[in-house]
Amino acid sequence: MMGLFRSKARRARPNRVSGYIERSIERRQKQLALYLDRKTQHWNRASKLLLLLFICLLLGGASLWLLIEACHATQL
Image 1 (cartoon, rainbow, N blue to C red):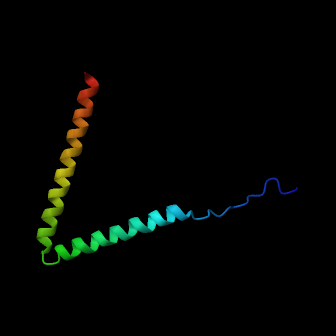
Image 2 (image 1 turned 60 degrees about the vertical axis):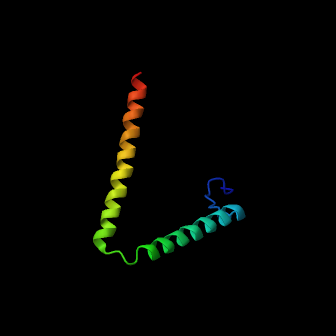
């Protein structure tokens, strides 16, 4: 049938720029993770959980505030 309906899977060629950006982001994430690990290595588990809870409450509160403000702005 002349190959009209054959599926030819093409391989996506990696783009040099996107590969460079991806490696750069991964390297910076790893650097940040290692830095934070060194800064908190002497903390006990309870301290880390309290910090996590504080961050979740802070970001959750900010998100809730933005949602309320957005709903309030649409009513005006």
